[in-house]
Length: 169
Length: 75
Figure 1 (cartoon, rainbow over the protein chains, first blue to last red):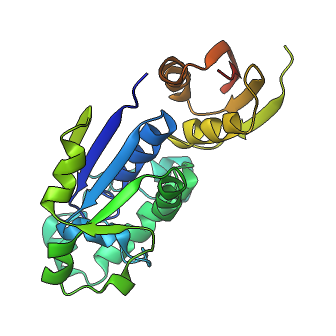
Figure 2 (figure 1 turned 180 degrees about the vertical axis):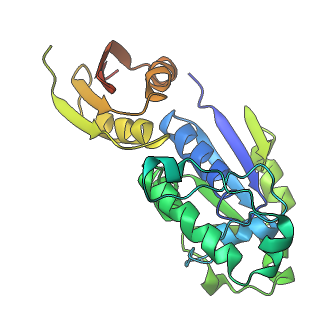
């Protein structure tokens, strides 16, 4: 049986959007796929050595439930309806939301992003950083983890053109 | 049923039970059986899909008070 292939383009640099590429890539690798992820624009944040800067922003995101990850059951079930105006004016609101999200992730047994990324690397998922964006954003290769490649669109197409699954995230 | 290795994936959520299963199977020889314990309800369908796509054989699935037990034979 020929090895199946999957290519992903990861373009988002937030804690919530860090999940889809790493979950899909690690699972595909476990299923025997050969996987490549091309990280471009804000997606480059997912290749940083230090991932503690990844945040989630509830601002302008009406789909995000705001629930507390602690306290009695009745308290946890409350969905806090906080207006955008308040979210944008209160300093540190994003940090607060990020802290709550990380606690919820822990409580529900969902893997952390650093863990999922490690699992991807262990499973030989090939990660490519967009060279153009690295320069555009003024990043340095020393900002990023090792064992990744740097390349451009043509590098992506070389693999993507032969894949069974190809997604833009 | 006899098994050669046991994996405790309780408390873990998608996709960790599958990733750990894959890792545990890699430590077994062909024909050996892995017992997997999980609390993730999604793992019931996922284990079937994993077995189908990887050629490993899902021998049984059982539920016991919110816990799932799978027996998988390595391809």
